[in-house]
Length: 84
Image 1 (cartoon, helix red, strand yellow):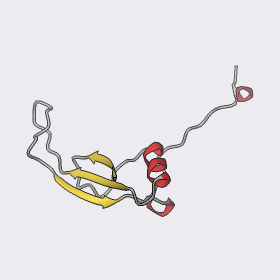
Image 2 (tube, one colour; image 1 turned 180 degrees about the horizontal axis):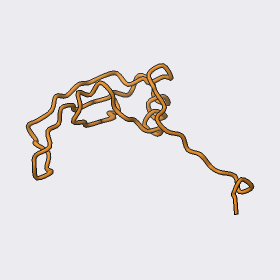
Image 3 (tube, one colour; image 1 turned 90 degrees about the horizontal axis):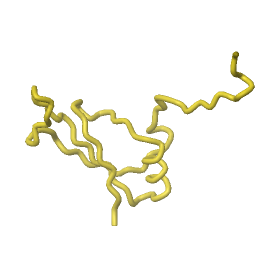
Image 4 (cartoon, helix red, strand yellow; image 1 turned 180 degrees about the vertical axis):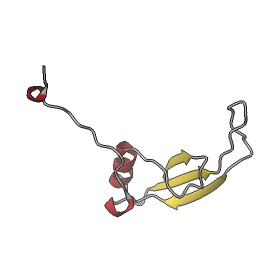
């Protein structure tokens, strides 16, 4: 059995955003995950997706730190840092 992480994008798909949970799942199940990226999705003028658009790319999904670029961090301000 393989687990699929599916992503869709209007871009060329050379870069996609993945969540911490998606990365954790793949790292906990090494060799059992694949990443599918549907790139080049076309959006019609009415906002709907053209179902005939896009190109599917499939990859082995074994992310490590060299493959990841952090975009954001969760920050928990301590109560004592609050300015009143």
